[in-house]
Length: 96
Image (cartoon, rainbow, N blue to C red; front, side):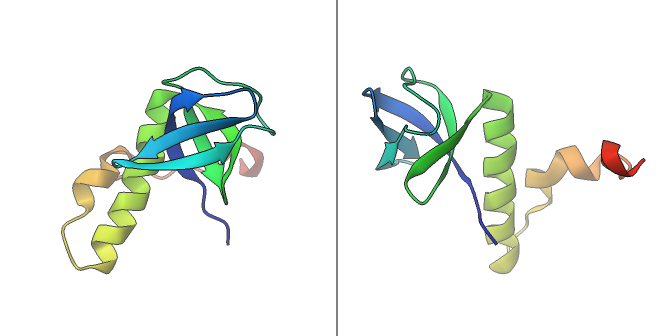
């Protein structure tokens, strides 16, 4: 299974950017998404940006990853999944 990590661009170049998540900075290749402005949210995997994200989607992914970590450690995690807990389950469009 592959896990994409949301990160925010803090310094941008033409082919690489310095991105940050939870105070940690990493060098990320922009070859798949093109040059990006500082402040842009990216979904990253193995040192490469694979998709540009909106701030809301980046936050939802980050909350889900943090929630999984909290659950594994036996800490409360429900608040990180409020968007799922407060609604009825829905089938994806292609399965309706």
